[in-house]
Amino acid sequence: MESTKNWNEYILTRLIKISGYSAIIFVLMIFYFLLREGLPTIGEVSFVSLISSRWYPIEEYFGLLPLIGGSLIVTLGAALFAIPIGICTAVFIAEIAPRWARDLLKPLVEVLGGIPSVVLGFLGILILAPSLRRLLDLPTGLTALAGSILLGGIAIPTIVSVAEDALDAVPRSYRDAALALGATQWQTIWRVTLPAARSGVLTAIMLGIGRTIGETMAVMMVTGNAAVLPIKWNSLFLPVRTMTATIAAEMGEVAKNSTHYHVLFFIGLVLFLISLGINIAASTAVFKQHMRAERILS
Amino acid sequence: MKIVITIISILLFILLFSCGQANETTPGSSNTSQISTIVNKGSDTLVNLALAWAEKYQQLFPNVEISVTGGGSGTGIAALINGTVDIANASRQIKQEETQQAKANGVDPVEYVVARDAIAIIVNPENPVNQLSIKQLSDIYSGKINNWKEVGGDDRIIVRLSRETNSGTHVFFLENVIRLGDPNNKTLFSTDTLLLPSSEGITAETRDNPNVIGYDGLGYVTSDVKVIAVGSKPDGPFVMPSAETVNNGQYPIARDLYMYTNGRPTGAIADYINWIMTTEAQTIVTQLGFVPIVKP
Image (cartoon, rainbow over all chains, first blue to last red; front, top):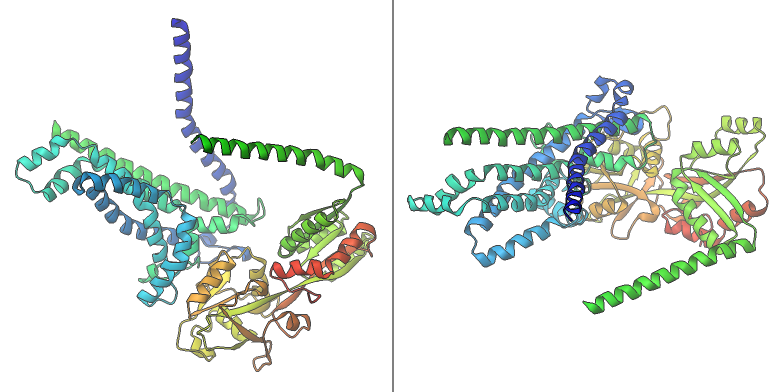
């Protein structure tokens, strides 16, 4: 009896260990694959060509800057749009809304998060882009802005859901203490609850941004995919082409092991490194918060 | 809940049963008559059409097996020269050096025009422009003309729409319109050309936006956009695309699509090529957005 229990436990701990390590192994394998397929680019395309501003792969123009710029501007726009709305919604649901509204809102937000991005893309093409064009008097509505708004919409449920959990985990006594000291509800939220939940809220933002930079389908449908370098002041209101849309649109037809194929993997590598960078930056920020909090407490 | 489970299990049972039946019948029918195989390879423009034909033909004649692959016109013709395929698909005519190579290999390429492909230029119905010359189209798409008033329209910025670079239509448009059919011309699409991943994307934006100009295969054009007459010379005549004007060669942005065989084919291959020329097969041509050679 005792030995079977031990045996079970042995198997279970091993299984859990394997699943834990498998995450690391998968990331390493993906990274290795990207390197293997993408690095030949450096030998095949000159560096000058890679940092030129023209992307037209069927005639051997492999300038990556318009694509990187396109992804950055769309992601930045989405962040500007999603972070304030997402956090305000999370604060409302966690702190202000009455019990019944909260029980209704939280599942609704999660349903919103489950809408496939293709469906959002269709809404974008048929409703968002035409209304943006009319409202702002643009030449076309298929712009970085349309992509940003859609991506914001995709990131908001993630941000709300994770940030709300973090706010919810702040002990009741913190709020009671603040209110007892004479703080208003707003002061309590802004000075006590939000800072206490800071690392969770930061994780929420990070996950939200992570979703936006990797999102493909919706972006491909509404940003117009014109590989223009977004350096003008009104670039947000012009069409752009993102890295993800480029890979998705071109990978299907490209001949294996051609230069174009390697460059597409190289773009994947750049994308991977950018999101790795975001992750590292965010976790260092969270880590620094901890250090400071610990110092204050001691 | 119980009812749902019952329904699901019944459905599953039916599914299993029907699968089993299908598996039993297929080998039986294939044993009764001998199978002839046709290998068909080439142009990516033609690949969907060739697949649709093959699918239909195999339904009609279950004793013929047709394998269709893409890879490009050049690949298809090279395979025909090497004798690895029975039929090569091409969206261009065979080149002289390819014919010479073929002759040297003892292959005699015979040409069939199996369908035609035409590109329609579309704008929003509100746009007053009715006709454009190929030169004007080239200047618009390469970024030399940026306002509709330069070609007789309203004072509006021109928004250029195109299919993605992987589409055969994109390459055809680049070579025959933007580069005016001149192989030494290296003009490119203007960088701010919107590359849309689908015909539906182009149609939706054209329907809605009075600033845009777009192009697409003639068969994909819907009735809620305006088709523009195109002239090969700057002073006309300007021709609207239709099955008729494409077939009599008046519409300038059109090309023939070819199949090549080694010598005059016999047996199954001859039957297949003859069937492609029938009204039935040419109806599929229309459905896929190409122009049929026989009027359906």
